[in-house]
Image (cartoon, rainbow, N blue to C red; front, side):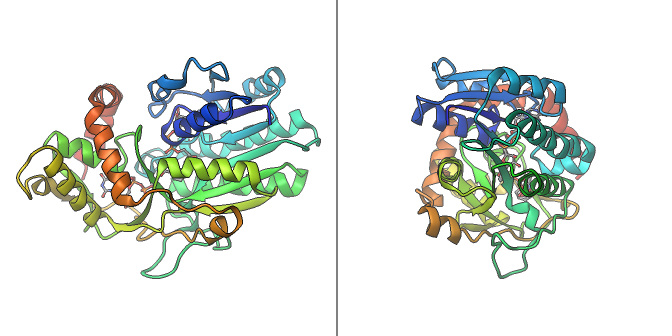
Length: 350
Ligand code: NAD
Ligand code: TYD
């Protein structure tokens, strides 16, 4: 593989994937295609922005003429597609934006790849990065496997499920070399503070209420973002065309237990008395259609490609909290402007 377009590379997971590929594969040329929405931030890639094998292109995956032109001029061998609207709460407020970016945007990229590669798929690859949320919600037991039936509930997960179906359709109908991975909740550096873990760290740090939806009983399976990027690297290079892999941390946490743990860690790191940060926990109105539990069975990835998470949750959370404490400027930059408005609207109605 020589030239790879990575979409959404200025976002949370995309920036870790771009960094990994730029650093580990100097022989590849990496093009980061990103629209720079509220979630895209080139500051996430400051450390590699001058590398000779990296280039940023600003553009919208929904803009078909632009995407077709990009394929014609850049002549990519592969696409790793992460660009998306990614926040469930925003999808409840504005579902159509999710249909546009996640469904139409993915179909637009698939079609550009098909038109450009013209049936000659040897040494090409279209890698679609997806989520475990397409499988819906688990009860108290069981795990999502690659053959679990799709059952999305939120506009976000419905749009991701639809995009996964388009990727499979392009493989089955046109023979495009596609791969899909469905991953559990990620956490780590450069995570936009509208998502639970960075929002909680930021609020605890600022002595602001930490909003917990409903009773905090919902369960998520958390994976360190750099372990996700490493899994994407392995799957991109080794998976057979048309296959799917689940990626997860075997690391289930009830939201309320996770928030309490973060409060404890921050009490220690900020020199607060034990229990001080936990006083900030505030139960708010539940999310509509809130999935109870996600949990991934990543056995296929382990058995076929030898992947397991490299660090424990305690280690990952410790690194993550330190990163947010050390990067106040990054937090100030991403929480100013539009984000303030979003935050006020989102939590005023709870
Ligand atoms: P993010 O919201 O942090 O980043 C998304 C990026 O896509 C941003 O840089 C944004 O500017 C860009 N983008 C949005 N619309 C675009 C468009 N129309 N054209 C070009 N670029 C556009 O998201 P993330 O959390 O890094 O997630 C990345 C991918 O991984 C998504 O596809 C998401 O569904 C998937 N995923 C996320 C998680 C998670 O826990 N965050 C878990 C599993 C899968
Ligand atoms: P989130 O980070 O939005 O990820 P997802 O909804 O994609 O799993 O939320 C993780 C969990 O935390 C989810 O059960 C909703 C809950 N949550 C809160 O309790 N409070 C919050 O302020 C947010 C953003 C999420």
